[in-house]
Amino acid sequence: MIWVDTIVQGVLLGGLYALFAAGLSLVFGIMRLVNLAHGDLIVLAAFVILTMAGALGLHPFVAVLIAAPVMFAVGWLLQTYVLNRVLGDDILPPLLVTFGLSVVIQNGLLEGFSADSQKLSAGPIEAASIKLGPIAVGVMPLLTLVSAIVVIFALNQLFYRTKLGRAFRATSDDAVTAGLMGIRPRNVFAIATGIAMVVATIAALYLGIRANFDPTIGPARLIYAFQAVIIGGLGSLWGTLAGGIVIGVAQGLGAAINPEWQILAGHIAFVLVLLIRPRGLFPRAND
Amino acid sequence: MSAPVLTISNLTAHYGDFQALFGVDLTLEQGQALAVIGANGAGKSTLMRAITGILPSPRDAITLNGRAIGHLSAPEVLEAGISMVPEGRKLFPSLSVEENLLIGAHARTGNGYWTLERLYDLFPILRERRHNPGTALSGGQQQMVAIGRALMSNPTVLLCDEISLGLAPVVIRDIYATFPKIRESGASVIVVEQDIGQALRIADHVCCMMEGRITLSGAPTDLSRDAIHNAYFGVSA
Image 1 (cartoon, chains in turn cyan, red):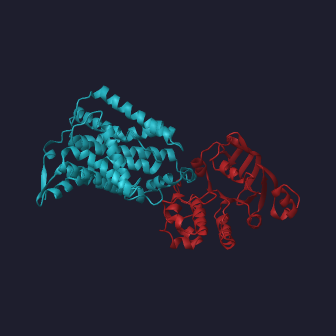
Image 2: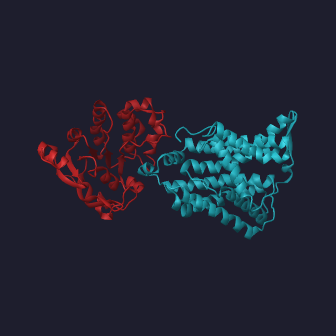
Image 3: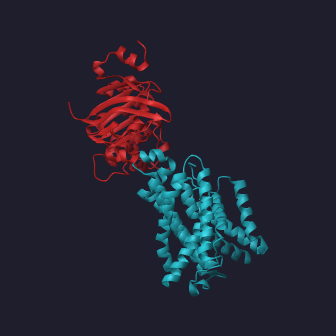
């Protein structure tokens, strides 16, 4: 029974990794941009929620409603004034710029909030659990997985059921021809990054409630997010959820064998999936 | 003679240091079908790219209904009323046939002649294939989607760049058979073609390009076969 419990906990943890990865997947899927600052932007969002909650005396679940539009604006401005300038045929400039941005965000947060660990306090719900047969499931981990599913479902609806989603897909296919349809690719990219930052803010909410965070933990979140995106198949949102769950379960199983193996087990699962299916579990047909 | 819809005056275009167009002058009248013919590399597609704003042009070199549009970007040119069927069709692989058509109306703000139903009446096979991926169709059907997509913006001027390229003659004939209906919607048309015979059949006016310049211009009935041959190849027949 302990193995069933371990797998269930791993699946729930996968929800958090899927949330880390969904924004990265969205941005990559539309503009083929690998945002190396994505993990740090999640941490930045966590500090925005912390600041809102502290300054206004709000519960984190309420503070996130204010932080989300703020982070949308951050994403929109970042894309419009920085990333759009370096997007092109050469993939190196965006990598360098987002790497630099990662360093700037980390140091900015260290300057503003110090290196002390912080945590978002959600109250009694953090310790609440429900019994599913013989297994006890934490309410917060369950809420995290449900949120990941809702976010990915909503992003899929946006992608495949709306005019904006059509513009996202058309721009992703061929930005020049999309321009001939009256679509402004740079605006589309800015909106996409804004939405990615809203998803990052939701991820930050659960990150900050689940564990301590400090300005330097962004790069590790980026690695988990990146692995989930690659395992799932580049640009596939449901694949990203599957990728997050694969890492979560692998980490859970690794930790059950030996607590020191938790992180390593996730990386080994990543390598194994890449060896067996180099394009990921659910690659987009036209990639 | 009706008022010019599109006027191109002394248009030049460059790819870096390479000059591709040299002072092109051209006028398209309301409801007219203009054919631009010329051999490979004559500058026809460059002319299309300049008109649609993909290539930058001097502000006053292109006017649409008296408004200077040479400096506008591709989305702004589309909003002004010029849409293009690009060479090679360039359908969006992620989109279904119907979505490819709908994306053509992305910038549309009001009602207009062209609707999905009218396009399906024009190209009935697309109604059957509406849920298929656009790129899963045959070449001719893809070309129908590309034309329909361009029409969905209800353009004042429709540009067609090499629409017969790679298609069987019978398919080309079927596609060009729809042009009278397209013109009935009020759109003026510029067709860029290497297929001289096809271009002469549908056009009211023909311009022949060579090495980035217009070397011959006139009504098809006024131009002799030798004159066109000479302008097209740069040698006497």
